[in-house]
Image 1 (cartoon, rainbow, N blue to C red):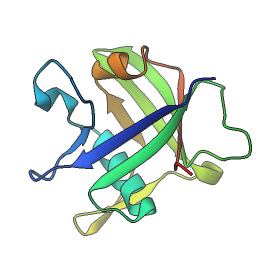
Image 2 (image 1 turned 90 degrees about the vertical axis):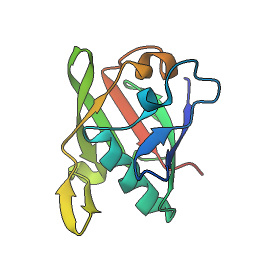
Image 3 (image 1 turned 120 degrees about the vertical axis):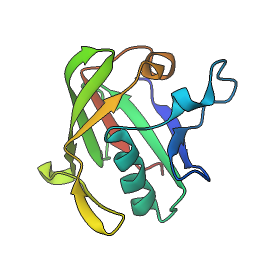
Length: 131
């Protein structure tokens, strides 16, 4: 089973980007949008780092033994990118305080950069806080 170790940074412009050293195209393609930005803020809040979110990721039915994902993302469709439903631990929808109001993170869209990071749009993505 492959475990992906991913880092996301909140940059000076206030937007979240995946840390992808050597990415050969425009930096703005690495921006997290459409719910993925809210997931980054959710993880960063859990980790106590407002500008950095680190996750261990497994795909599909592969789970890390003895650990529970903080969020499971289940693909709903593909097209240009892929949309995922987000389910938090114990089946709850993750909630983040975003600019003074609570936002439920029900879905997240992942852009085609996902294919360079995870090599596919998996049916399921499991997010863990690194140990």
